[in-house]
Image (tube, rainbow, N blue to C red; front, side, top):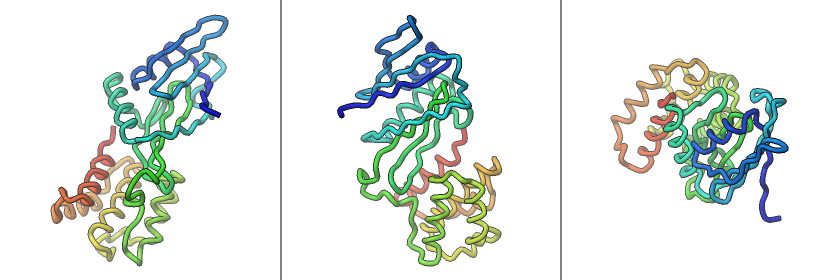
Length: 239
């Protein structure tokens, strides 16, 4: 078995082509008869789409996982192209593209196209020297709770369960009572900040202020703190 070429539905071949070309795909072939059909390509990846009015994008359950060598590079290319084409990076609705998630098995992002087809695009963690940086902390008291909190938020994408976990196992009403080293505390608060933004559509001022305090107290040019600051900026960059 050499290569898999997904064949997926879309309501409009013309709009589908425009969307994928904005990401950097090249159109290889378009057919109008006997049925609308298009072949597009990005590097060695080839996707096929057929036009049908029977598909409702918001009800489309088609999914595909695409493993890539460098998920960061693909994400940057897709989001840059999409923002250039539409003026924004859509995080909700159709089409949409998520931020990169650092999971236990890979780093990935999710993209749903105009037809409602969903792609999970990721790079296995074996390709990275420190795959668990964002997902793990040194604190013995909070390590297991934090790992569960992180996975609820980003692997299971269960925001409400993550919020309940945050309130149950962390002193959410007094974040200064979380007894952890500053780097661990910053990682914990990053997830808590994201939970509040996703759940309440608002920034928690107490969490945000504490993170800013931590950043001002440490050298954000140092590798670990630079990565934490980068993640903070990514969470705060609500499109």
